[in-house]
Image (cartoon, rainbow over all chains, first blue to last red; front, side):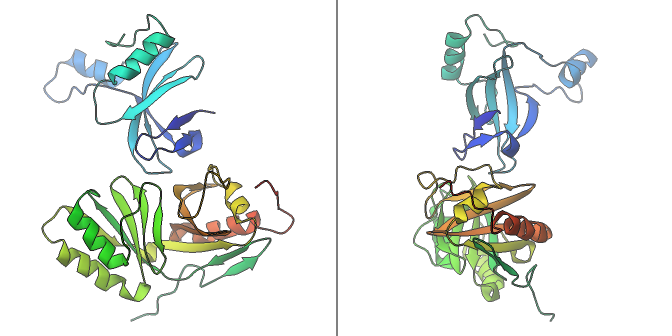
Length: 109
Length: 189
């Protein structure tokens, strides 16, 4: 079972306390953007075998959204971090590089 | 004015633990910047406690206390008869600052789980480590019990208080009753 630590209340929350929020760090293209940009924003998602960045919500808990980095193959969790950011923290990227040398996820590597 | 009654009007059941619906309690949901000293002072005055609770803690009790709900949310407990006045008091004391205080007393149900093995009653239905090392007096968790959202705290040895939405009060009571039924003791803790 997936267990993530909520960065807001510090609880080691297991899956049934959380709700998944899809891919992390999407950049919105709204009115006025090109069709290609909007399509990419709306439909195109990463589907990696390996390191993945996701949004989660501590739904049956403090109710806050946060980010998590984990491996889709082994379910290893590299870390969780605040939702108030558009890039993963540098230390976390360092941890992932050490655990999965050469990983690439969108512009992060 | 019609008479206010709680969801199960004080129903209780005796298993290896006593599960009881504790009647009407004044509850005020407060959202705001919890590091704001003025907010903290006003809330402490209303609840009659010395300080705001730490993360995942409860200070005071049902007749005057504050529960931590999230990084920007608290639940303030006051006597039911005073809750309207207490909300007014908060609104006038903190007028002009950015916060929200709402009386949610009639939208919540309060339960007590008392007796040896009370930890087990909760451990069976919530995804929370209820061991004596991990969960002690004053600790609070906002989580789920089986299928519904709830928050509970440890009020004393073998004594827990639990709040949930009134709309699921009947479910919560039956759930806790089954969990506390005689013959269901696990004896793990």
